[in-house]
Amino acid sequence: MLKDSFNREIQYLRLSVTDRCDFRCFYCLPRSHREFETPEEWLTSEEIERLIGQFASLGVKHVRLTGGEPLVRKELHDIANRIAALPGIEELSLSTNASRLAQYSDSLHEAGVRRLNISLDSLDEERFKQITGSKLQPVLQGIDAALASGFHPIKVNMVIMRGINDHEVEKMVEYCLDRGLTLRFIETMPVGEGGRSASEHYLPLSEIEARLRERYSLKPAAMRGSGPANYFQIDDSGLVIGFITPQSQHFCDTCNRVRLSVTGDLHLCLGQEDRLALRPMLRSGASDEEIRQAIRDAIARKPERHHFDEAPEAILRPMSALGG
Image (cartoon, rainbow, N blue to C red; front, top):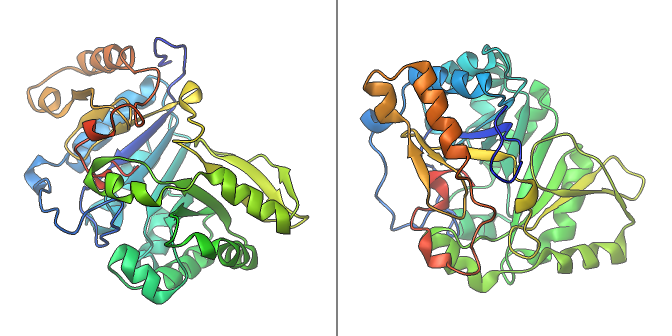
């Protein structure tokens, strides 16, 4: 069992399989960014399998595949197959922008992925292009394909930005209600250049909750998963909405997750830069026990909380480097 010095049990690992993305959401990956890792620096499928196996032996039960955009990595199906077969891994999920999901939905489900988080910040074609630099329709087609493939739950993540998409909240609620999707609203985070540039559009989700309460009945709801959202049921429908508030109401005291980059760096906190480089250990012949002990030692250094407010400029990497 992995526990940090604040007695938080670490059961959830977010694995970035690439730092590349086919979208350029301005709050995540600035369009001027060109400093991507090269494939020879990426963890191989075999290295990922070995590392995740060590985490599983230490008590990690849930792995989420992230990016960048994980579907741009050719070996994703193989990686998913390997992780799903590991003893101790009880849940394998995926975060995606869904632009390629229509093509890969069935094969991902067959590989063992069961739960999806899909980024969707707007239902307006022009506004979607303004935010992402890409087209909306492939994303909507990907969501329909995921529903047909049997993924459940499918959570739609909407980053709320004042003056950009905050007027679409009710429209997104109706879209998710019609399709049986879970909807989660997320505050912007000042991670990297893109995140800091979006700070002028920051909107505390308490304003969105108050607005929704004027139109709907919101009752506290439970939602299985490892994330930090506070969930509510809309009226007497099957729609559950969540609020993720990393700035206005941080949830660090219940943090149960760490993040592994595509190059094998174990990041202990999204809002700080302390990390453990595991790839050199893998490639220099370290034993499984040496790797496990290095992980234990790193978890013991996991900070109590992020410092977004105090030092937003401290995080230089773009959000895409770790998948949020």
